[in-house]
Length: 221
Image 1 (cartoon, one colour):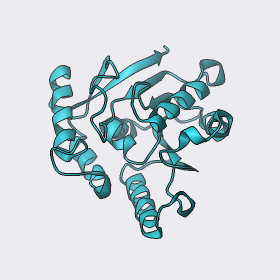
Image 2 (cartoon, rainbow, N blue to C red):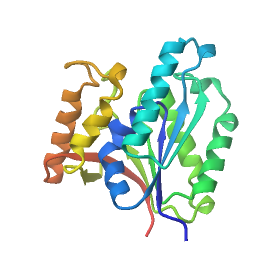
Image 3 (tube, rainbow, N blue to C red):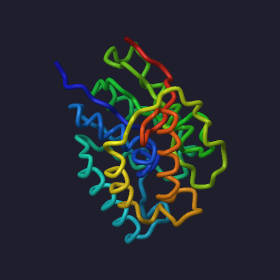
């Protein structure tokens, strides 16, 4: 019997930790394999410098070891440019990976996220995780990912699942610090202060110190 696994679909590195860092750490402790699917990657042909690319690759390497992830797949599409590709171009490699791993839990960006890359990643995730394709799937969840712009409502995922991450919050923060270039000081939307404030708010709704919120898209028993 295959080991239980969870796959997190991320348009860009850092979305996995912002949206589900504590949840992923808790599932790792529970014995799940963690699979990280990154849709986009910096390349010189997309206008990024070698220094930027090297820094991003180091971030991915370090973060993948800190969880640790069992499998990391970087599909290499253009950041902020997923709408430049045909749906078939995007979906083909993702479908192959889902068929290979047959995950039990699927984490996706919200369908309501204002960022186009996030919307498209959500659409791809829904398309490749239909039940007839993978009988192992038990749940498909949307993550709550702090926006870079604060454009869009914080509760746009219409959360209906709150997960206690009190034992894992400090580790989540340690991992986030690897993304130094993506974080800013308060009142920047993606600051450590904002991350903590959101975790406290969700914790108050959960009845714990810290929590992460999700929307259950589908659940199978």
